Image 1 (cartoon, helix red, strand yellow):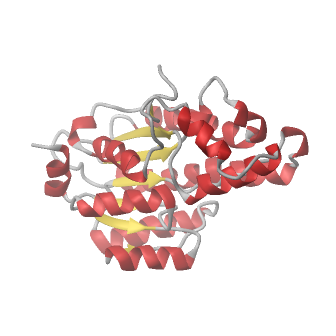
Image 2 (cartoon, helix red, strand yellow):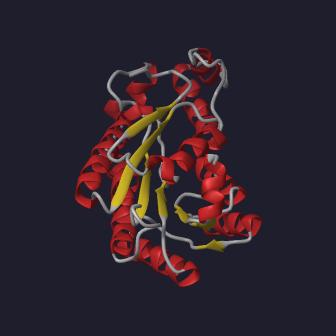
Image 3 (cartoon, rainbow, N blue to C red):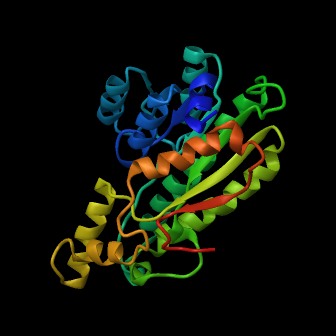
Length: 269
């Protein structure tokens, strides 16, 4: 039985934060395409509604930095579908700014969304999952995926100088994933996905800001980064979704506490 067939047969209930655009929307489309019952969430109510309309599913606008919003997302998911099988903590932000120009507000906002937001989301999800029956006999009660990044790994590329707070947030998220995996085992698995260069609106904004800082033509920074990818191309949201679907499937029931690179070979370990 293929991974896609396993997901389709199980029909898991999957909630995704930051699903109004980019990687999150790609994840929502992929899971829905393979038979999952998907709940989309985003701080942007219009984007959330558009994603929900596209997939003909439930949309729940939520600010992940607010515990009551995370709890409401889980509650509305359970009211609609009876349980929550997979929570994907995807909501996140990016900013390019030289280290010496960062201020406390920049730092607080970055870690507030990327780390605190994921913490509050996984906490709300875990409370529900621990109270529900397993996915099937011998399986976990639920699965949580966080969206980290290869930027949270050791080593650095030239862009590291202008994303120190982003890198710190993703490193913290990898650590949080490991702590949650220990806290919730064996009832819930918790794993982190670490993408590389995903061709989304976020990376287009990063290229615009980075090339402006460097004083080079727009698009050049992106082209230089993609040229370094061994697989010869940027990745797509579907590349990320393939890994997410594997981690959500029975094939990954014995995996927890892992942070997995999906980056075309930019980082090798």
